[in-house]
Length: 387
Image 1 (tube, rainbow, N blue to C red):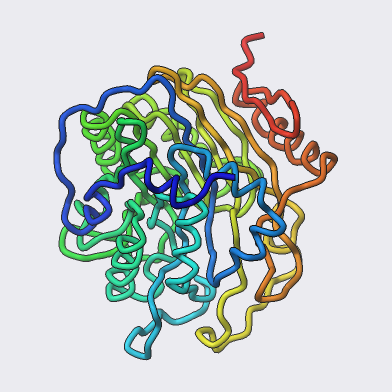
Image 2: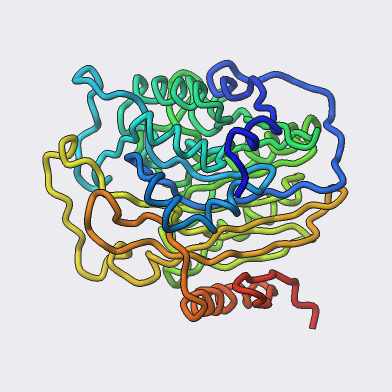
């Protein structure tokens, strides 16, 4: 296993970790390395220190995360030392408020995560003060982050890391956000793309694609992250607007489209040689702190949080060679189902049989997009089906 301090030392985080508020800077185009690997996971609601458990029981997963040159996840929470000065939004249809301790955020960094999205429905849980405090925590721990900020330009600005001499940029947006919490020209919030009657707003789409084109001019690689709850014809399939938009994102210059939000895996597509992940599922969904949620958490029977698909997930690892994806691998894992604060929904390795079941399901979901998954040594290799 790679020592976390060694891993942090061989990658340089640039000042764009503060760019979500500062608005970012322009740089000359980044050179392409011979090889670079990017690992990606879905929703991270990692609320309390649990690294000791993971190091004991989930070391193979941590090794995958730490071996990658860049490791991405969706930071679907906030992080600061809570005091009564922080007032959360009311509970209700948006669900419980979540808050990660700074100690747990530090643990995510030592796991290997360095590039995170903060564009999701939980980003505004603690208002502008919470977003600002979260940015301070993430910056202090050395994360680069995108997707929320003082205004729309700041929330849409890319964050980036440098790995193997190449800059990897992230632009992060969400289509699932409570009205009035999105960033505008004059209001802080998360970067939202509006969807009405199943159609993505044309102006919002154009703005996102223009941001991708600009980011690609200054960076060797661009990841576009989208947090979306909307289903397609089935809950396990993406909505039509997401499929069309994902391909437009690749057309605009992005190298990876990474979606999350439905809390279960969806299919994978190889479009113009580049991967589209329609949902990366969950990395960790720990139970929210009861002291900050007066209303007890109630999961309706049959909800996604009670179904088997909720507990099945994967780490995607994309290896680029001379700027093009050469290898896309899916490493299945599962979340613990214990209903205990200390261990519930932490990631853990799967048995070979359970891993095959997860990869078989993702393969079936990917087939309509012309992708097939070849299973080798517990992982799935994604291939474009040219038959």
